[in-house]
Length: 118
Image (cartoon, rainbow, N blue to C red; front, side):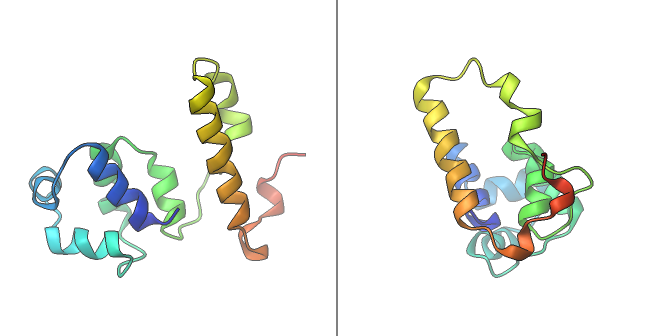
C-alpha cells in the first residue's frame, strides 16, 4: 500500500471529502489531492501528524510510507500480536493478507537487518 492509497482509503472510510479534511487540518484540498494521487510522495512530518490524528492511523506508518526512517520500527510481531486476541477470524485473515502484501513488495533495500527480530 502506498501513502496515497492509505490517505484516500482513510478519508473514504471516514466519509470525508477533500474539503472536509482541508477544514479540519488546514491543508489545502489541492495538496491533499496531490498526496492521494502520489504526486507528492514526501510530505512534511507536521502534515503527516495532522493527517494521522484526523484519520486515526499510525503516525509512524505514515512516516515510513513517506520514506522517512522511523526511530522505532513498526513490527507487528513484537508490538501487536498480544493485542490481536480480540480480532475475529475475518479480521485476522485481513491482517495476514496485509502482511503478505507487505512482504511481496519488499526490495533488498527495504530490509534493514538491524530492525529484524531473530
